[in-house]
Length: 377
Image (cartoon, rainbow, N blue to C red; front, side):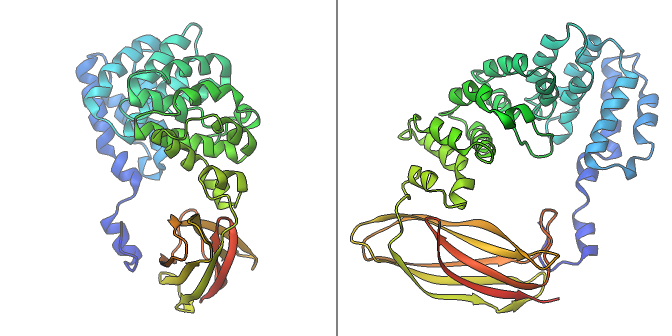
């Protein structure tokens, strides 16, 4: 990651755009070379002429789709014959983000009569090189019931990449993809998949299951809370998934979610010495805050300590963003010194605007202290 104080020119020199790292002209030439070795009738020149025309103007995802379309234009038009070549090509060109092109080909062209089963098998095969999570959504959108039946079988597969695909592919709100509106409205069809994976030994899979459930809490929190109520929380794998699944509800101070992680009781603590410094900062600087948290109870307490920053919006209003800070057990009469430093810089997901930014400290969902800093122009 670039230094916070590096200039834009320095950033562009040290960190080329992701599209030029993952999908530059060299990637297309590699695919053309390997495809020609596998299929003597493959027209590498036609593939490159199609692919490289205006490549600099294309975004990362547009480049991925460009390769998909170039393969369609140069491989056999019979889907199964083309798929046979791609299955041999995938191991020769390596894993990673660029490998998403193989399942993308299936997503775009694998919907012919009688192609469903071969397409599902191909997505299962290709997911081990990158991921078929985006591609399978095209099949879910067309035939939810049939595709979920296949994915339920994937959730019992011996390969962690395939099991993860079973969960990740049917997330209702998967980032970088369209929403699966049917599952946003009713998540119950995915319940068998989530049940199969609730204690998965793979962290790769557990992250997906936790994120999937967290997606659902945004529309159906009670559905998630009812489902996990019967899960074996004494299993550390299940407990890890549940904690990740409830993170949005916990940030909102939902009492049921807090109770699941053992922090449902009203906190009996005192906060003193809350300090935010510096009181004013410019974009690119840092703000720090600190405080002392002291028990006022006669027994140990499980505490979830978060903080909220009320970011100033372009129109002058504010919008709060909650961040995790600390989760711990505080003994009776004990105290903890807590501090946090945060960079104030723009991201693709957040643009800062000048004005007074309030910081709140939340303990088990309750606001117990607050302060502020001014972001200068």
